[in-house]
Image (cartoon, rainbow over all chains, first blue to last red; front, side, top):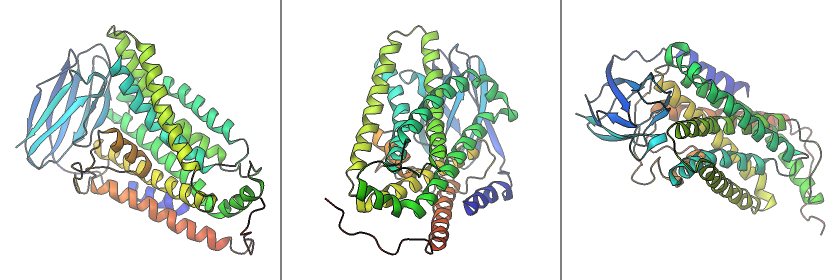
Length: 108
Length: 279
């Protein structure tokens, strides 16, 4: 127990925050659709993704192909960090409106 | 309605799997049904509160409140499950003996039930708050059949949870607590890995390699089986290095802890185990 606590705390405290330069990209949610639906980003770069929700209902930005899961409230915005990625296409979606809220990261 | 039922199902399933493992791991402990029930009730209450405060949460700590909140809850659950697992590594043998003899609930062993109540509450709270926000959004969007969707989703998720529980109970008593204890350790390690994921997303921790490997061709994160294995053993098709470090760190800490507690308890351990239970 003590060891576990120390391990976890040690891991949390001793590490400096990731000091990688991040490139900012913006996504807009409107009518439960992502705009743009294809977001082009550079490869091998950490991305700060800004998500603006213009709908009157909450949404959850999520992907099964890269690590991301964050709720964005109605008429507000969030930002989260993703990547760096190898070149390729990575799908993401809005968990609360999956039929329409589909998008693709195009890494090049 | 189907979309509503599906989302609710996925969220309920994740909580139900954790509850099943906890319920199985506390088999034979007096009054554990009450504790699990209270944990679920508290979790539902908490889920509504968290959903109500989601807007505030999102804007705290310069925008990373959501990640910090989730990571904190997950790490708390990791600590509590670990505590129970260590407690069991000391008392599991006695519990097995008593269950072999009595074949029924034993008194005592309640010391770590409070912790497991909290684990259940946290699991329900995390998944439940998403369901509440989702339903709120659906209602604002004028979607129909909310309640039917909710009921079907809850029912389906609970059914799978109960199925897991029943399956776990079929494990022979000789191996039972060793197995459930091992499973608890893997659940805890998986939760620690999820906590790391949130902290990486908030840029509070480095990723140590964004995708250490990709086994999504074998089992993807999005499928129901992928999600089940994710909860039960912490499977991730594309883990970051830091997640693997958290996962391994938790297992290592538990292993060391179990060794220390069992060597400390050899003095008081009973010398022999009855091999033939009375019929």
